[in-house]
Length: 540
Image 1: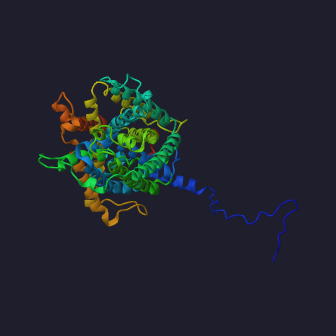
Image 2: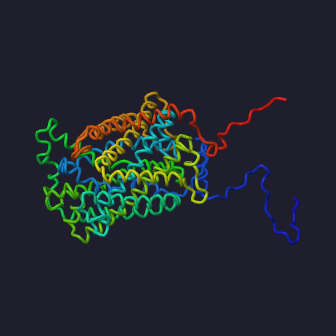
């Protein structure tokens, strides 16, 4: 044996790696996962541009803040009680079960297509570019109106905390409330625009903190209401004379009241719309979708139940006028009640933040495929903030313009708000129905190793489609109580859902067919290098 002695002044360096042996990977597990996520995005033809900074709780918070239990229940409780009395509570589990079918389908899609603008990209992948564009178009339009509707919730809560927030008049004038609502709502939309423009990390931090406040407040509220229960659960199984003399009996008022629950329990897809900014979205997004929906159902259902069992007088007219605000103040007292209402303000704020964020990702995703006017400008990601700034500003401005309609035409605004929800349900149908067609043809395969419904996929998908179609029809039904509640009465308001949705759908698709479809395709600046065509080879 020959022993090799190192020369003086040199420490032994150990065996040298073989020339073909790869260098050890010194990256962290998170860096490796982020690279895998970016490689997955490149497989769809897109260049990674958005910063991956969101963890599991961030995506969960985005979904639950869009649903926003405190915002929705405090904004719409009066509506359900007004039309169906305490029995309206049963619409909450009914809507949950229907939306759960949709959410389960979305979970499979979130694991298969972890890209921004979930509804647009999913409908495009499942139904083709035509269905994708129409679904995205309706969702973008609905999001801008929904942002304005959420912003109006400030007016329902802030003036009840203090008269200081009734800036316009004293609230007694004919248009005081409407004008003040526009003012407060505009302040909120300016805030959400700035936060979303300054980057997803700031948005996620504020949103997560707000969701924590909302969840803690909701749980405390449940406990406080439970401690003040004055009647048994039999109160929610009585019809209390509602529906007397109507053709369908109690069913008619109940279906009308169910709109209050249907207006709340949607938007859980936001958890997946942030897929390009999340770590390991194939795993985290499906979980976030289900957790957001189930948590919202449990917490919201208990708040509504205990509110009905704790309110001093179930027949007080204030219950169907001021809703949960009246329950909280009359049951818990002014001090505790105002603390809860401040938490509701926080919930409204983060809800608007999440709605705005979802709209930005949707507009970015469509513009990246050159599906919107001025697409190259809308899809541009700010190198400083790492977020699309132009759609943040544009969506905010449109939402403020929609708010202004509320000043002199509150009935038209209520019609637009209702229609926005219908358009979201229809956009969901543009995902679940093509997915069902793919299942029936045997061409749908969930992502291997990720969320899958297995043998339950087909029945769940069928139920999701049936539910979406039935609830869309229920939402759009020409009820004068919803679409033309006060004089003057106009046929076009009562039939506003069918007219407006028809105009948006037919007009949008006409624009797409004659002007847009030949230009659709991933913009060069956003195309993954792996998807760029190779230069043609020439023979000498």
